[in-house]
Length: 235
Image 1 (cartoon, one colour):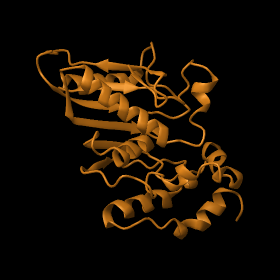
Image 2 (spheres, rainbow, N blue to C red):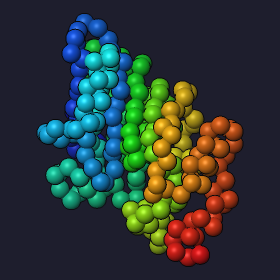
Image 3 (cartoon, rainbow, N blue to C red):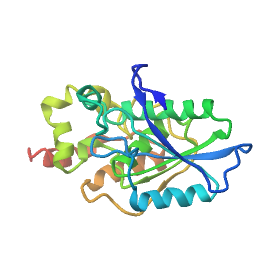
Image 4 (spheres, one colour):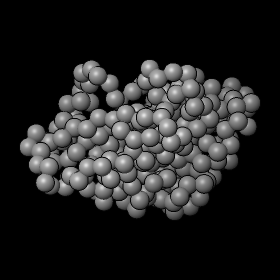
């Protein structure tokens, strides 16, 4: 357990150890993340196929952890839920990275120099945010069906974030999206991409992000202005 960015709120987590766990060893760590408003990963219940996969990772020699940052639908009150408004990707990545640092400081069996992260959909987006914002913490990541640019997210979930009157409220988020300005730099290690494309996401968002990573060029969001207008119903 660590503290949120306010220094007071408890951030809960779960640890999965290898079946053959040896406390005298140091283990690399894999974080499983979602971190957005639609779901939790730290729950007192059966986790289905994801739990089985994380158990398999642990038995392959890893410590697997997961944390619920503020904004996730944990039953912790309105302030917990609403604090993420206008800060998707920013707040979550900061609190997740802080939790990983706290984990390494607390447990001697955690190898703080070998930490990775993976997630799907919103978890994929947060994987990108974590890798780009905190490359000192995360050395490798697997982002499955991520949303690199919320302005191109083709669903009501994204539309609520990118209406014109909301964009002014979110300058930090839209100026520092996963492939935008204001990030600390590209991660030092390779990001893995699953071949699945999120069907709720416009293709240009993926293309722009890949261009940014592979070509070592700044993103050009103006190239997709027409797609944004279509998503907002303004075309």
